[in-house]
Image 1 (tube, rainbow, N blue to C red):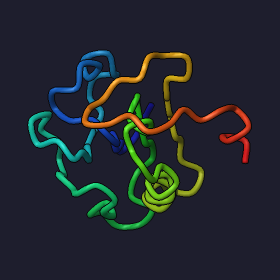
Image 2 (image 1 turned 30 degrees about the vertical axis):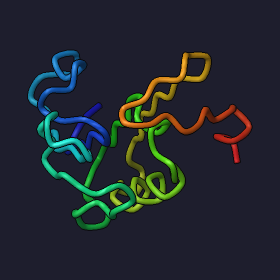
Image 3 (image 1 turned 60 degrees about the horizontal axis):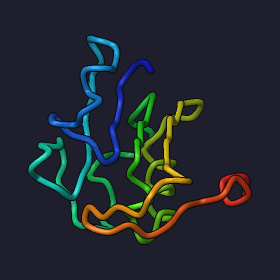
Image 4 (image 1 turned 180 degrees about the vertical axis):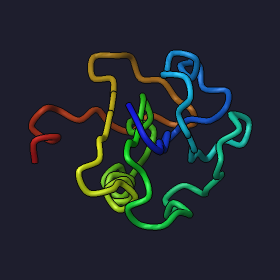
Length: 113
């Protein structure tokens, strides 16, 4: 993880924030203002940043909570610089858990497509 970073689904109060390397320029986008993201957005809204802005995009345990995950992935692609790095984790064999909802578990075949 390096350069300018966007944390999709994160914010100042994300539990993993202290595990990231120190000194990163991290911005975040989230629908939940309580986690204190840089940008609070409505579900399905575009990220309020310019194209090709970030060197790295993080998305930890978020996509399963998004009804249109492909729309969010399109936004991630849009804001990620060419040659940038995307780090994604999504539970697969984990209980259904809402925050506010839990919509899907993508298989390796889905990710490959």
